[in-house]
Image (tube, rainbow, N blue to C red; front, top):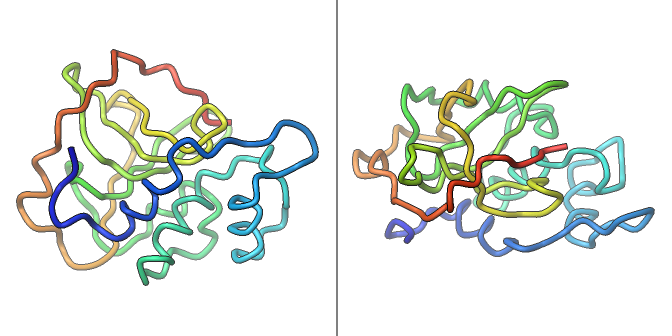
Length: 165
């Protein structure tokens, strides 16, 4: 279930669901393109690329991402801080060695937040994360409409163990 009308940065992200890293020296073409546009210091999909994915989604929607958008925690400086998640907000997670970032697109029956993100089990996917793992929610422009705070219920089959590195 998606909210109507769909947010352009969410629509962009959904286009890439299922895009996987290429093991070894090769890099998936879309990821390589995102890295080049961002002028990233690395060129492979073996280095964490969740921030690069979100950067692409926002830029395609005409939204300027934060400086150093290849870093997950850089998104914590986006303009509008939310106390609770809204559909389409940028969610930042704390993890050992840094952070993880994606776009909130729902919740599951257990209360996990469903994150549309890159570098989730080495691919673009919608994955469940415990709400307690999030250290911030941000909105890229004007404050979201109230209906955005009603998160769609998605089936996650209880899967909350997702690697992000």
